Each structure stands twice: as C-alpha cells, then as structure tokens.
Image (cartoon, helix red, strand yellow):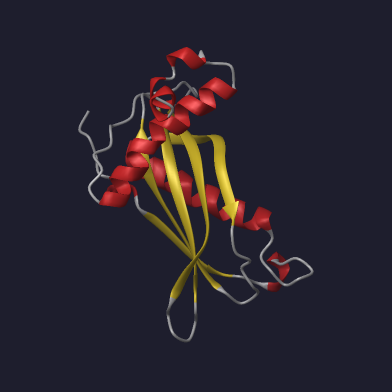
Length: 169
C-alpha cells in the first residue's frame, strides 16, 4: 500500500453561522460545530483510505472561542497519522472576518476514524508521511495519544506504553 501525505486528505468545509444554529447568546451551538467537524473528518478519512469510514472516537475537543452568529467558519481536517485500520484526524476551526478576510483559530479537535469494508470489518489503510513541521509534530504526538487512550480504556498495560513512559524518563 502506497503511503500518503496529510495534504492528500485535506478537507475544508466553509459555512455561515445561521440563527437556527445559535444558543441564547447568539453563538454557534457546540453540537452544531461537532457535527461539522465530524463531517469534515469523515471526508478526510475517506480521502486517505478510499474506503467507508466510521467515527471510532472523539479524542479531544477544545471550544476555545465562541463563534458568533453570522460568522464564516472554516473547518479544516486532515489525517495526522494512520495505524493498521484507524486514522487520527486533526481538525482546526477558523473564524473568518467577512470584511478583512483575516482568520482566527477558534477551536480544534482530534477524532479517530476506522476504515471498514462493506460488511463493517476493519481494513488496512495507507501509512502517512508528514511533510511540514506541524504535520511532523502531530504525527509524533499521535502515538502518545493513542497509547494514552488505550491505557485509559484498559486495552493496554501501562508498562507497555513505551511512548508514554518516555515522557517521564
């Protein structure tokens, strides 16, 4: 299987925050943003694997900045690392000023998707070759995040989490 670069999975969803999508403070509902991030991550995972993909977990979500009514929102997703059948998708959410075009990072998230066949069984996916410095940082950290998740879920013995142990030695 030929390895791929994160840029090959890049997905950008651009949308406007409408009144029906806001809370009483006129900011985008968190659930609305989660749905947008899930869709972008799904497309990125599909672009990388060229298979059916399913959300396995939402590993991290940071709602760092409210997104007000009328904002232009750009949800950017791309595969940061792949394992046997799973892919970590890193998502950056940007708010774009409609007049100046300036973008401000509002939120970020990390999702895990699994590629499956038509029967829903996991299938192998291509490996990732990071190119930019940010892609390399996210790639390296992905293994630590995966090991932490497995340890917390009771699926990995903490003594076997070599990447996590290296942080403390």
